Image (cartoon, rainbow, N blue to C red; front, side):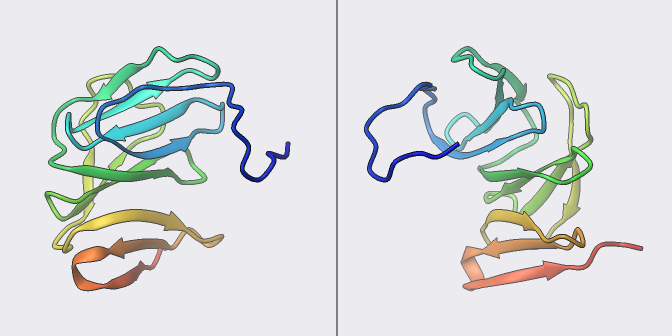
Length: 133
């Protein structure tokens, strides 16, 4: 599918106060972070009505990304951590801190070898974490 550059047409509008991050899972569900509510909300594909999946444990979530196994990683700016939610997590799930001690992590990404990259805004750098064997 192609979207025309500078297109003004849209098919889905999701209102969310404090929206700072958005990603999709393998099924096409949309996940969004709100740094004012400290939540992660899931919107089923094609829906504007969402379910809050994470409502505690995040201090100032920013961007989020799924890995190839379906685990969700959230950059938690306020806590200086990357938090992972295991594939298939449900509403109310608590994540696991997989990286800590960061200075304002804002985004996460993975390469084809599953190495984790973190945009660490507070230190003006990108940090690479090698996948564990």
